[in-house]
Image (cartoon, rainbow, N blue to C red; front, side):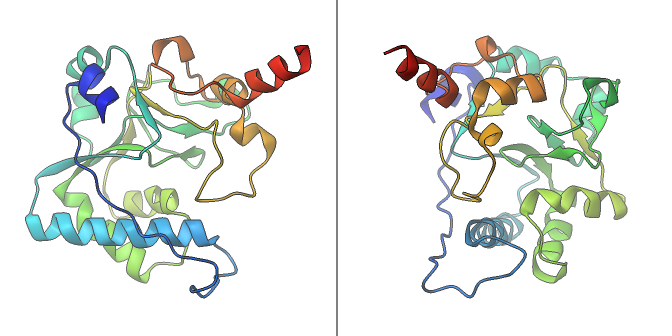
Length: 216
């Protein structure tokens, strides 16, 4: 909250999530308990903002890190970004080659676009997301974008640069069975075109810690 206040001039409000336990929750074969917890958390969140009838909301997960120039970059976003019903202020793009990325600014989210750690959502998207969470085929939460696009809801990515990146150097509560690259900040930065020097990093990347231990 302090980092977003300093670099983005945004006063965040905490929203407590739901965390199922392995002992008390029925397992879903296709989702981890963490993924099910996130879906339940977001259902709770969207029920709240529908009830309060907010026109638009920022949503940041607790490991989100804003760009040092977030305020300036946000003010400079082109109209194509600001017109989106769902705007990803950060994303994890998993194309095998950077040349496969869409070339235009504020491109439409595609099949390789994931991440729900930094969003600007408009009222038009609330009920469709909640409907997908309640009645759609259970999938990880950030798979909702394809469904929204099928419902004629615009989902776009604010890039370049990303206004927010996630700190991936810690174990995930959502899915703890990820491969090593998932927790290597340097490799992820190369994969997703994150320029780490532009973000106030709060942790030492695991990869760097391992290198230091080897030297010792």
